[in-house]
Length: 367
Image 1: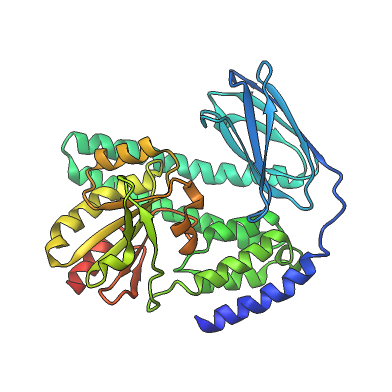
Image 2: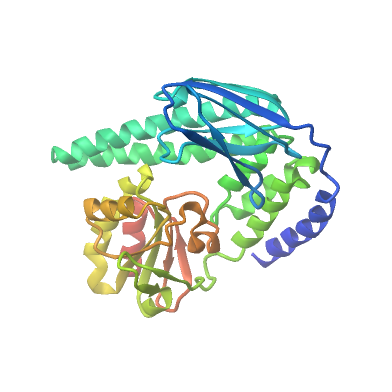
């Protein structure tokens, strides 16, 4: 992986310099919305690149609100209420953006605006349609398990995991077919992980120079450089974070054991579906030196603790309750969950993203 790190470093030096002059004169954007049934007193808009995002607040009157600002390039954004009962993603670019719909049907909102805004609407629908099928399978799997039909539940979970992986294929295909799109840079950032960093570098190299030198492109190059350092055979990055009781837990204390560092969250459907498999593996191999250390990307303490109790996870759990900004998750380049790293007794990473039968097979081979 060293050659990839050096390659990405060269990209960073090249494109960071060009990004200084890549900005265009911002003429500004206006975002106006009318959402029936929205009874929150105020609503927030967060938008910007990976390293320079900002949050604006607007007053809601009879379901209507508006924002004004400016951007130097199209950027991802999210509109949300403080309780997240209403939230939706979009892309912001300079120009007029309009949102209409109902608060209880966020997936059916009509969003119009500049080219990047329209492009993201079409892209997001494709992703959310697939996500909807995953959620439907999760509900059916839960129902099957409650009825004691573990075989049916397992089949549903297998199909759910297939659709979850299909989402990554959808993103990758989009990136290949839209090399001059800012959305492609953002999605490559989300797509790239420790297992596909070499492929991600190839996809990055195929992006248009304008996209590579954008602020999102530079941030993407930084991420690929980080991922090149978190690979099989490399020492696991040590960390300390607090558990549910507020006590410090260090990865170093598990030296001498096989540790599965599992990144998850209470709100993550695929993560929750994977927990029964983790529990089975834990019970089968805990007496042979196998432990699990959960790292939660939750931001609500009660939801985190309730999920641990409901899913019956007896292993150590840590979190700083910063959501996607979790310090450990950032150290490991985590941008999608579930994700995990299997660390050997010497503290080196020996496997990545072991889910379903792959975890059982790997542990059987090692232990």
